[in-house]
Length: 470
Image (cartoon, rainbow, N blue to C red):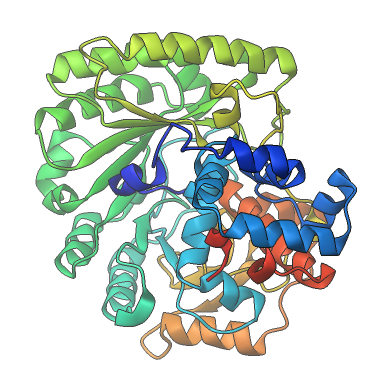
């Protein structure tokens, strides 16, 4: 679940054009220019790796860093001009800007920057890639109990949390199966928080909206699509009613012409690359029938444990498809659609020579105390998890990554503080890598990079990138 708030897309997609580059500086400082380009394409290089790549000493690297740090054009180039710009803008900068990364590195308490509410009690789909226990469901009583827990968290959010948009409603299980989902959305919105929800859209019927009017208080609604036609949707979800029902729900929702930003999430699978073009047909048809438009589409590379890395030929084919998409976006029923290609697909979109797949870690690189100062997930029982994919009910072994439970006597602040200051953490096992989503992998790589740079003797404060200095 790579997270980006479309309400801030103007910031995260700051510019697609390179800012002014000082050609004279480049001629005089070729190694400095190489460092700038390296970090524009590879945000997670350590300082030691830079020394080895350029065959320079630590002192020489320090001198280059000092020069680069003073150059505004260089800072702009690093953040917005390379294959790594999605990593920089979607994850690295948001993780650092409020000081929460420093808190993790220093093992100090900080209120979580991102809080995922996972209120769903069950799910209508049985997706092949899903990590959930298909037979697990919460008892109905956790509708009211969970609502009170989520309200408590919202009420107890400290004013100094430095994030006006901390909450997103997601899975675990399908959020629309939560009996008080409309009340939860409304409560957060009335407290001044822009509420975002990700759903499979199956229950989002006109009748459901009448019963749950609070849904219309959302700021952002993301609907995950698991196929572009009846056949592909059934193959993934095992629900024969899913395709038509979800599509009709999207059309009817768009007809309401709310101020809610509505977007679709879609994962590109190896054997179905050209389905992305069928997805454009789907969106164009939805827009035409609703006389409105889907606001955004997030395309992602398959990140499931069984997924294979895209081959060079597949990436070339995707580039051709993305170029066709650019032409399609000129059509009247698609001309307002913003497409976010995410971490790994962005380099393909830019036709970069770098063919690095989506960044992943091994279980040996997992951090014992995770990073609850940055991100946590909470289920209807009040259980707090350190990784996104550990939140599924009764998922084997996931309880090891529960850092505590919120109740009327224990706040989220107390749970996180106790874990950070008193718990020794979790010793990872090979299977534990399945509890991490793409965001968890990237944040772990980022934090490990910071530790490695500090150990090498060139911490971020002495590095070449202003955005990494809090």
